[in-house]
Length: 174
Image 1 (tube, rainbow, N blue to C red):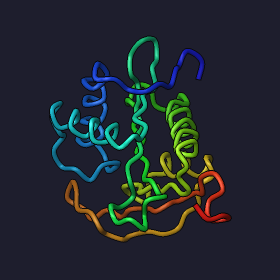
Image 2 (cartoon, rainbow, N blue to C red):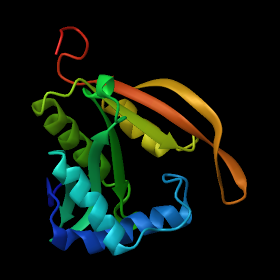
Image 3 (tube, rainbow, N blue to C red):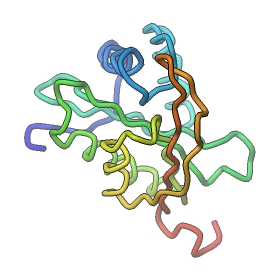
């Protein structure tokens, strides 16, 4: 998207990151959190991601963060050490302008540069066609649905699972 720069997030971006995330927690199923975390918790999460040497990115639109994405280990057990899970959130006023795609593309590129071999997307609400479509356009494949694993806003909610190889994937040993 013209005028958008994807860059590493800094602590100065975290107020905006918290605002964007809080919107998604309060209004949809992209997050299964029920209460939006405060700024201190967002900073703790940011430091945890960065402390593991993983990317935490923002889409900067006219000098202001309009979306963010980050990667975390898929699971803590050592056999999962080559697999990451991604998260991508865009401000509602910036939706459908290519920011999610720019963020996910750069997140994939950086994960590959770090030597990771697989990326997992766990999409809240199997009906979230925007997020599922974003991931499909970036080489993810649908691998399953976890029916009714969340309960939010008075209803049961599925999670859609998608994954894609990074770099050589499983074609060679790490």
